[in-house]
Length: 252
Image 1 (cartoon, rainbow, N blue to C red):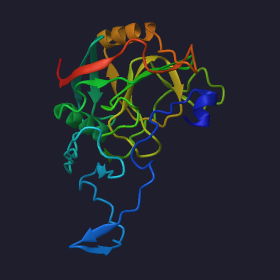
Image 2: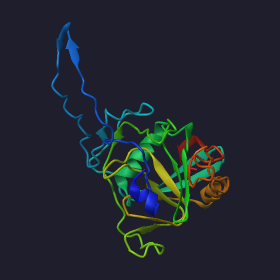
Image 3: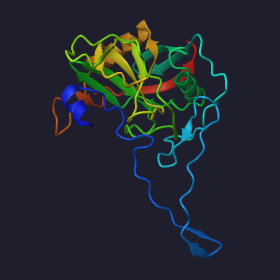
Image 4: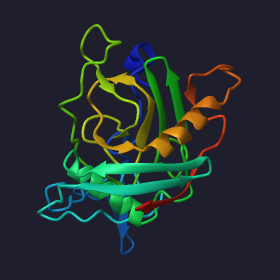
């Protein structure tokens, strides 16, 4: 967790994702002759405008191919996705115009059933930050899809009324946004905003949660955060009531 997060309730949304871990050196032996291989070239990104880039140092938490990356990435209209969770449905409306590469990746992961049987591993309940974070099949907060892609940051969010500096923006209740571990490290983890929250505009917004989804989020939030021996009254941690995406599907 970053110092900014501790002091300002910003969002340390991934403890580890693409581009964050330290790569180990690799010694290769070929045909019985030991040799020190030259460093392998970085895997090539996809050739379209989204440039989905493999992250061999951060392998996929669940096997999934790279998303399609057509030259003409769809950038108009909305797409409906439903997360059927053990706590109730969460309906999402994805906005292609707002974040075309993000929507394309998210739909790809939905179609490949990457999110099925996946826990929502983190609930945050700071006074200025209340979100549920999902999208890591490992449930550790460190897992991703084995690739990363660039930010599509919002430019029209209003200033957060709780931040007198004017630096943070309002991520309003119902916002759907990508988690990340720094610039251009988007992968599979995302967060659902349960109450108006103040964040630096460093997180790609790509849709909205519907009314039924907000009711589900309210129930999850009301259950609180699981206490630990180190923190009997946490404001950030695993939901006290376990949350699992049983199935993610396009449509209602």
